[in-house]
Image 1: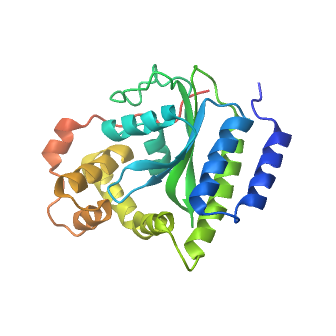
Image 2: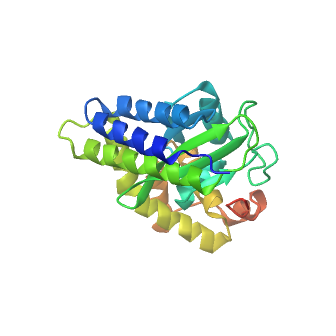
Length: 250
C-alpha cells in the first residue's frame, strides 16, 4: 500500500516554497512540520538540530509526543533519530516497543512507528526530519520519498538563512554543525577502528566526555585525534556491546 498522495505532496511543497522566504526561519520550519503532519496524517512530526553538546534538539515539533521522544533519546543516548544523524541515512522502525536496536530507549506511550531522514547541508548532516505514528505501521518508499522532498526544502531554507547578513541563532548553530562535522566524523571513525565500536556508540562516548568536562563535542573530538587523553579503552570495552544493524527489514 502506498501511503503518500503524490499530488498532495507536490502541492504542499510548492505552497511552502512560495511562503518560505516571507518569514523568519523558525516560523517557516514550524509551518513545514505542520504540513508534513497534516497533509499525510502522521501522528506527529519534528525537525531536530544537533547542538554543541551533541544532543539532537527540536527546533519545531507538531506535538508533545515528539518532544517526549526527543527527551527519551537524549537520556538514553540512542534511538532512530540519532542513528539517522550519525549515519546520514534514513532510519525506520515499524514499532519502537518491539525494536531491539535501542534497548535503553524509554519509548513514550503515544509513539510506536518512527521514520526519519537526515537534513543535509553541503553534504553533511546537521539534524533530522522525523515522523511517527501512534500505532505500529510499515513504512514504504512513498513515505521516505516524501520525507526526502521536505528535507530538501528545509535544506534550501537553511542555506538561505546561513547566507543572510543578519543571521539568527538557528543559523549560528547550523554553522557550528557544518564547521565541526568533519572533525567529529574523524574522531568517531578513530574510536570505531581502535575499539571495535558502532558509530553511534563512538559518538555517544564523545558526547559523554563533552558533558562530563563541560566542553563542546568538537573540542573533545579534536583532543582525541590529537592524541591527548581520550576515552579509556578498557572502560569502552566493558561498558559497550557490539553495534546492531541499522535498518529494519521491510
